[in-house]
Image: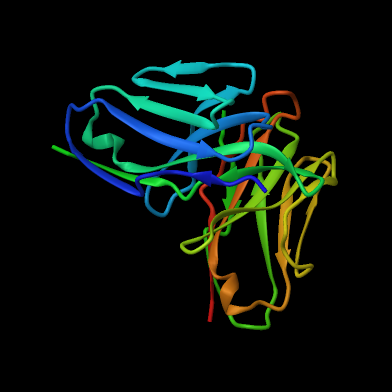
Length: 114
Length: 113
């Protein structure tokens, strides 16, 4: 059974720092990996999607990498800002129990202090 | 392009009642998925619909059901509500292709008393 882990569960940093968020998964048989952010009480906003055949994706100050063989992905946030404060979730699309679905990590709550 | 919309945004129900939640996908998206989010269990997959057919299913009891209409709009129904059904219910839409990138709506906050 696929399990997705995000450590640490929370992180507090001063504004301007470059950040690395970690995501690990137990089974390398994934279709893709997607990073999301969630603001309190809101839905999820898609940040980056990496297909299983890709190694990384970039969007603005965000860069996500994928290493399927080691079961790891990292989300790099450059020059963090208070507006980056949110919970960040990673999810992998897999086949489990005969169905395809997204399996989520529990998320990492990021606080960027001005 | 309008995003995924969900109605209602908030709902309070009593144990034993049933509830129906609605989701309208992004225009052109034909796949709709439903998720339950709770503090304890995190985000869990309920089911996915494409072309009015349930294509994928998570590990939830039969009290949770859904359907999709010809315009791709989807509804989720929960019968005989239990206190543990209190959660944020999220709907996501995507194109049915190799990317499967999911776009989420704002969610429906269901409280069961």
